Amino acid sequence: MSPTPVYQRIALGDITINNIGQLRKLNSVLFPIEYKASFYEEVLHVGEFAKLVYYNDVCVGSVCCRKEVAQDDQTNLYIMTLGVLKPYRRLGLGDQLLEHILKEASDKENKINKVYLHVQTNNDAAVAFYKKHGFEITRTDKDYYKEVEPRDAYVLEKLIV
Ligand SMILES: CC(C)(COP(=O)(O)OP(=O)(O)OC[C@H]1O[C@@H](n2cnc3c(N)ncnc32)[C@H](O)[C@@H]1OP(=O)(O)O)[C@@H](O)C(=O)NCCC(=O)NCCS
Image 1 (cartoon, helix red, strand yellow):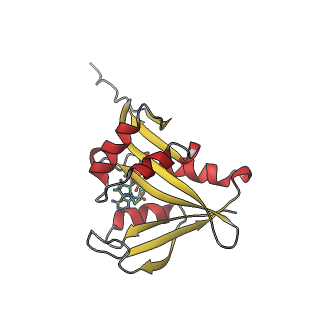
Image 2: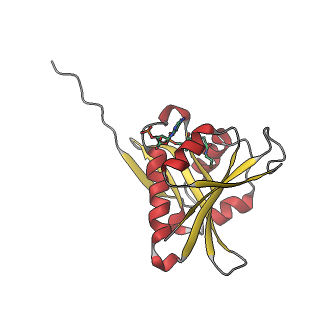
Image 3: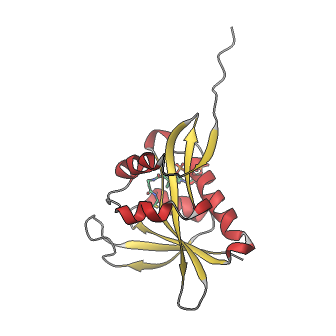
């Protein structure tokens, strides 16, 4: 008898008032920072720039971004959080989340100049992950994190052409 094939289905879904509790749970496991009510309020209004990822219908990760107008009148996209639960890593889910964000950022209507984010300087996995997608480290922000060690953060950026 041949073995049962492994069924793998990856899908992205919207974040809504009805499932935002899932995002809270994910964030509490994935990040050492407690996000305030204002974070969740903002996420509900960014449209395609915030998504949940499902693996065989189980919610296992998310991405949440913010659109910012910079001093030079350019619009930048800041990735506030992007994470996948540990047992589901290295399956391409992070790729799917980030590719979705980069595709939306490239949509001319969104007028995004660059996508950027902070990562702790010891987060080798995240640095490798973002570099694979064409991001570059542009500076180190000393003591960026107040309550976690190491406190320093790299800023990673990708220009949208
Ligand atoms: C960074 C993170 C989101 C990657 O998610 P993921 O679903 O495992 O990523 P993918 O499976 O799509 O990996 C894509 C590529 O990124 C790179 N990568 C991902 N994890 C890596 C690791 N631990 N070491 C080296 N390279 C890694 C690889 O090039 C990988 O491709 P490959 O598996 O074909 O070699 C995940 O590790 C995570 O959730 N970390 C905790 C939260 C976090 O630190 N977020 C980043 C700051 S917002």
